[in-house]
Length: 280
Image 1 (cartoon, rainbow, N blue to C red):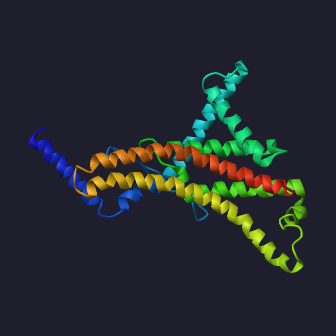
Image 2: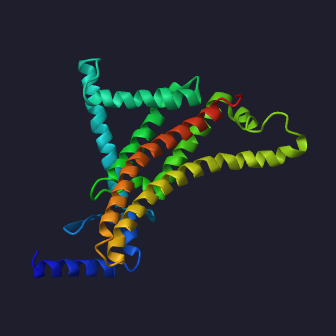
Image 3: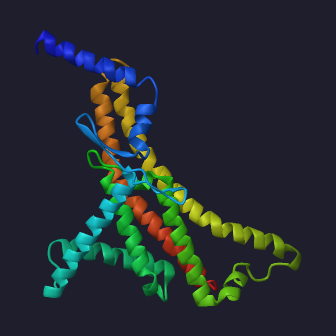
């Protein structure tokens, strides 16, 4: 390695170090944006749109949600075509069928019980969508849409509506809200319990949204922070340690991506089961 090469590496490190004096570089890679970054090559600006005063701009996370939807549509179209030719699964059909059977038999059926078939399509959609979004965020230049609180809140609100509608369809509107209060509660305690139970209806989707958002954001922050130590400490000796730990966290993120899709689906299914079968 000649002197010019060494000097070039040192200059690059100094520039990177100057950028890491604040945390804006880190949040730039975590937060949503109005452009697709392919640093250091190029970036693609995304359009700013508004409708009746509401910002409906296409952002980086929106693009990756569309990409996740396209991937799922293509995959399930391929699986559908294979099943039309033969009922024996092959290739990707075997993989997809394994996941579907797992979600049905290990998550939905045990937590909802009788009548689970009505909610299975929604829960499968949620599981595959979250899983695909999580994995897209692990790719180079990828972005994790599920690390956006707006996305997780929207998913939680949809689950909230499914929970409430499912409970009302099974028990009736009056019967559903009446069943929220446990039997045998003293009359003087009923107003307090009613308030607590109504608040409980909203804390469940809140917990779903915050759990998914926090877990998917935290992993990326840790990886970037570990890599940033190389330039912050101004020494090459920390590079092997930082890269090794970042690689370990990255592999752990693969497990977290699977786990968070499982947890969101499992809790949604559990809350649906509690709303539908209030007598249990």
